[in-house]
Length: 394
Image (cartoon, rainbow, N blue to C red):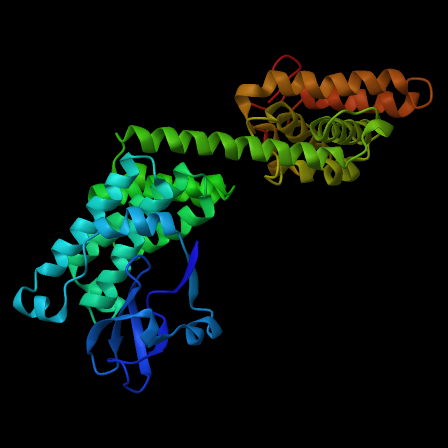
């Protein structure tokens, strides 16, 4: 490795031996030839030997970079040189031929498995195009004929970085490629590589977003679909792992439970039992306060259908006993297709609690049974024909 000023670095240089030193921008450094291509403030371009450049200026400004001497010896001599100002004046299309040749050189290195060298070739080609053929990078990106191959160079460089498992670098290269506003097939390739790079960094939500965008553009794209499936599986695994970590922090053993699901089921069952007991003890207002919150929409209707219908049945009975007939009908008619289950659930609670309190609360139990019987077989005219009976509760 050697040290050379970076492309775009400002150095002090003289145009001819013996001239005064003045600021100049580095266009390219050729370690093997010992020459540096410069552009001066007035636009004058020339190539001068290292002896005519104050390299310490670049070193102070941290504009020095390590140079792979093997790359400089083997690859640099084969690369195309950017067109001069004179060449561009004679043929404005020369700049497009230059970036195409640079991309081809990078592709050749990629096929040889020399991914690090390919990355450098792709990126250097874009940098040389921007500094040698345009007033600024922004101007270059406004030129479609230049922007398209530049985006392809960055995208291909990202693929090389993925081959090297340098995911952070691949993400950066993908973002540079995205600045070139790729379209159609180029965009699909870039979205795939960006998703792979983000996934490699564990940024799964971002990876999923890029891949879903690609699949939305072309649903039949197999690589995108397969990569999206992989990311979705990883997201699911990450969610499960997070859930396990959350459960690991909760001590359920004191309640004889093994999971949050068990704890919730136990709490729900206890609430239903308490509400039914209050109803049997003629504490209808308390029963309504206990059971009504279960019907506020927080319980999943499909997962807790039986509990919801049982709670609705209990609220209907309590409302009936309090004389709130409209509310009673509303509750008792809820989920009519599951009335039998609700009746069985509610009466299982009543049966269990009647045995538990048969001796301690005999009068209250007898009264509750009498009132329940009145509800089941003797309904007032304001209750619809679908009101509760002993054989088919609503």
